[in-house]
Image (cartoon, rainbow, N blue to C red; front, side, top):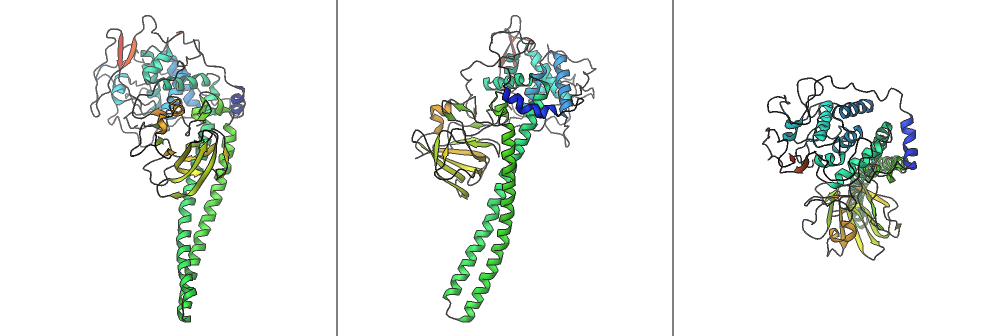
Length: 503
């Protein structure tokens, strides 16, 4: 059985300072639900469990929990259904970022643990005893996820149970690597979360400050053009009266330029301060970013054979289609502010911070193999990325944005001349399921076998079915707008069916 290696010393050092500052009473345990919880052996019988009146509508004021409450909830739900709490914590992190991003997703998944409504009707639990099984309630959602995993055989083979939650090898790897990381101590999950929140906040601040600076420069240029036109007319006017009038107009435009320049100066100072904060956040997370499990959370660069994928964040948030909408290029979708990296050892041929109408903010570089690549739509370009600069593979070059002709945040990556798709490059394909997921096709499992959960709770030594336990298979999801409330069969020819697609 392949087990995850113990946490690296660098991560331990990076997190120790944060974890060590927690008060002794930080991790308060929420008592196990006093209710008679439903069994994991059978789904809900239609009509026996009350659901919210608007199942797919998030509450106006979503519940947020402290780290201590989260830990207690994961532990009590895990104990109730014999599921390692670290697995529940990892799924909670990957699916909703501990309740910060609860959807509904583009696929319709909802709540703290991102269930499809039809699946929630079958497996939702009223764990807090208020009479309603509510996916937007953290206690109900986490207990329901534990029940779902238990029904999938999670007590004996948690890897297979996680696969039933999302039928993707990369998802199993991401959840179990986080699980093993969290297993090094309860404080690791929360220390890593704080590192991530600080880093994301710093990246967002830089991206927003860069946007404001770009916007502030436009009035300066406009006023300068008007000033120059009036001044040119004044210089060539034959009549003194005309020269005086033109000089006056040039002066008014000049004053507007100076006023606009003051706004630019303030925006530049704000960006400088945000850059300094980002540098500190990067330094604080540097040790942890090289550790499996932490690297995707922190948006670290992924490396394969001398190449680096250009966008950080991992396959849960980074995706790409095999084709571009009108010519060979790769549109790599990722949240605004995600880090962008140099794809290989390279030299910058040119870069620009004034958005091009089409490409926006971007750069062109030549990689070690002689190919030329262009990046477009950045929200921010690193000050060090200038013509002639040498970059190592994985060097930060900027942040994802939507400057120029872009309908949403993504990195546009193309070869120059644009005669072939980047997606066809062997190095690009090697990152599928590692650094990104395919939008228009299943993402192949990585060559490595999925990680096993390194815990005494997991007793299975391979991916084969545990003797006597059902096998889980994917089926078509319920059509949009039609909630299937019929109970799922316990087994048909040894197969138990679920219908939850990826959120």
